[in-house]
Image (tube, rainbow, N blue to C red; front, side, top):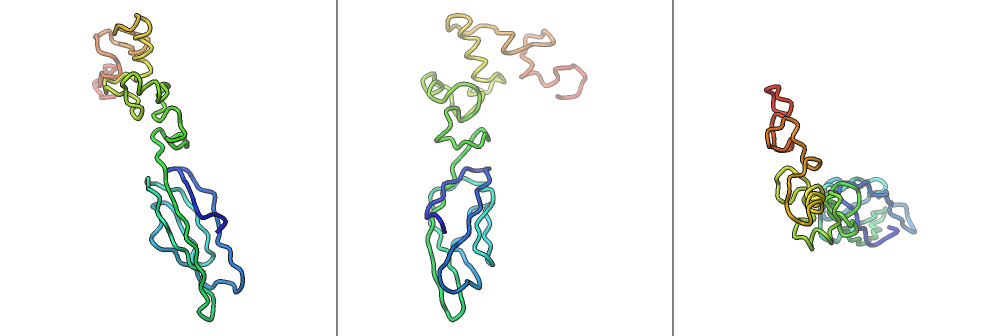
Length: 171
């Protein structure tokens, strides 16, 4: 294989790679242990491809190329699958805004909000919008209609209202 380490991101297709040998042409290929969910191995040609679906710590895999006359060669590769909380195809360790809420992780940590949740306090208003409201009133929590619209004028933000359009069908 052209590399001994693969660092992948969950939900992101990997560039397929193929095994390479010198000497006899392999008749079959094997891999152990089973690859991470979403990755596939071509037992006829030694190709590794797919879209990893689960986060995984570094794990070593042995790949064997089996040729006629009991000729076998093997290589070990390590595969790590990194988390991507917001699905932007950038692993969290490289992403300045893990949850994609518009507030970078460093600022969220300094403010005490959760950098992996768009709405840390789960009140239906994103951290970004809440921070915008606070900045409008010198840091005091205020009503912020731009951030939390109340279409019906009920005093409940649309995000918290289960029937914003009052059609008796939950939105």
